[in-house]
Image (cartoon, rainbow, N blue to C red):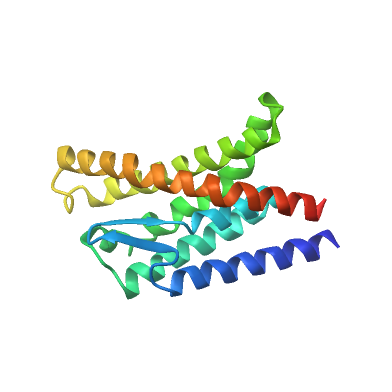
Length: 185
């Protein structure tokens, strides 16, 4: 029975990721021509915290959706970097794998489930952003205008985008995770 629930949950979250990918301005939100944020990481966080194996599956779906968007509707020069699977897919797979283990580690030291979920959502979103931005730096240093300019651009993206994405993960993801835990357990 548990495997059936896990399969159904993964199917629902993959469908959600696909809808958020295909509907413009739903999962990948373009704020300005060169600045965009994503909220597709939230279903990955939710799924990984409900079933450990889901992180890999949903992280892969997220990465493939990012590659799809980069190939079909790039909106800035940085989006061209996401046409490289090492930038668009690999960091999302690693992100999906890290979430459950981060939660488990935090749960050992924090006895408050809500605080553990909040910290997991926040920190896993930061880890996601750092992984993606590191790959952007590695593969896009020339496109971004050299090392010094690239670091400034990446730093500003980390401060602005990552903080908005982390806040969204906390406000949207944590209440859903709490309800799913109550429903599944």
